[in-house]
Length: 261
Ligand SMILES: NC(=O)c1ccc[n+]([C@@H]2O[C@H](COP(=O)([O-])OP(=O)(O)OC[C@H]3O[C@@H](n4cnc5c(N)ncnc54)[C@H](OP(=O)(O)O)[C@@H]3O)[C@@H](O)[C@H]2O)c1
Image 1 (tube, helix red, strand yellow):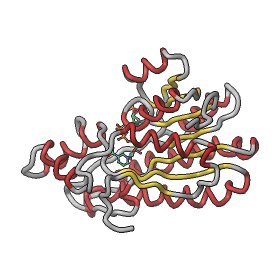
Image 2 (cartoon, helix red, strand yellow):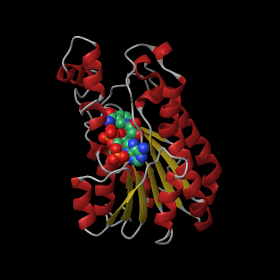
Image 3 (cartoon, protein in one colour):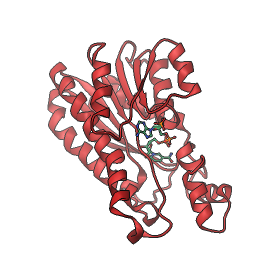
């Protein structure tokens, strides 16, 4: 199926590894030009940059001005068709909900919610003026599956999904589609890397990181984590005007982890 993404212009946040990197790779493979934002590049991202369709912009998206500078850079090439709000991070809270400090909350809300709000604020007016665009935001199953171990992350993702739904109502009549993707555990550094969820939970208990990850995988009907490329394929679909009447929707990709409809 031709997704009509050839020649489109895209921005991906948190793009040097994990889901963001997979989204950059997938969009570039479909012929889009992608501006990839992260604090540091990576060997995998540099390979894509060398391919000619991807540009890396070093940016700290946790700063108030970072998101706008990324969008401003992308708009220097002309219009922006696709925005993938992917940046996010999780810090497990093994000491319990009441041990989460104001500064912990500030930092999770800032990167998990405000970075997307600020990026959208910079990008969407231009899409509205141009009469079209697609905004895809990576939320989480935790938006509707609150978990004390990631209490601030869960609340932040709930706010993010809710914010995107509001936005979809405002800009939908002007041709801009806004959708969210809610993954369960994905095979990335966030879960499996140094200081990732598996390692932190392992340090707080009696299991090894591999056992923590295996237990999480076993909660899915499919018995495994999602691969970043599988999330990226969903990004492509939501970016494509083949799916022009899909907006204000949330797509769960969790191997059947969430038991309810
Ligand atoms: N992995 C999962 O199980 C899972 C499940 C559900 C939802 N998600 C969501 O999916 C998104 C991506 O997660 P992931 O697992 O792919 O994470 P990841 O592997 O940890 O990658 C995070 C990316 O964000 C960048 N980043 C982090 N802080 C940044 C900052 N302040 N400014 C700019 N870039 C920054 C990182 O690069 P630098 O460090 O170089 O900046 C990296 O490229 C997040 O929103 C996450 O909440 C993940």
